[in-house]
Length: 145
Picture 1 (cartoon, rainbow, N blue to C red):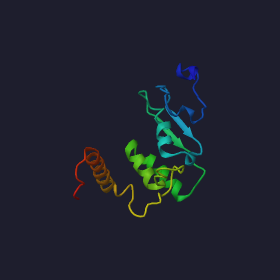
Picture 2: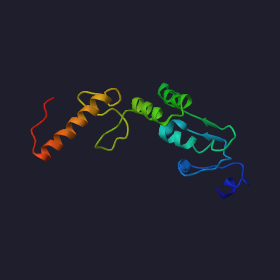
Picture 3: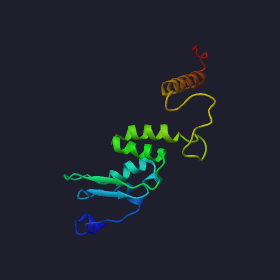
Picture 4: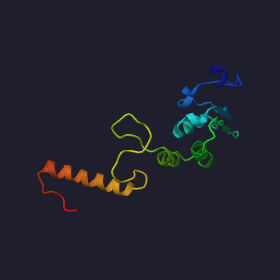
C-alpha cells in the first residue's frame, strides 16, 4: 500500500477492505469482480477510492450474474454518483429488511404502508408519537388528530 501511495507500484490488488479510509490521488482505475455480490452503498464507497486526483478515473464493474435484478441494481451506479439516490434505489430494489431482526434486505412484514413510498405518512406518525410521549410525560391531555 505504501508503494502504491508513493507511486512506486502501479497496481494494487486488494479486498473490499479498502472500502473506507484510503486516499490515493494517483488511483484512476478500479475493477471490481463479482460486483453483483456487493451492496450498492458498498460499491459506491469502493469507487469513491479512485478519482481523487486531477486525472479522469474509471470504475469497471464485472458481474457474473446476468439477471434483470442484478442489472437494474448495477445500472443505478452507472446513472448517478449521488449517495442519497443510490441508497433510495437500493431501498426500493432490495427492501429495508427487518427493523428489529437480522434480515438486512427484503420486504418488511407490515400490514400496510411502504417505507419508500409512504415516507411523508411515516414522518407524520413519528411526529405524532413524539408529541404523545411529550404530552404524557408532561401530564397533558392526549392529542386530537
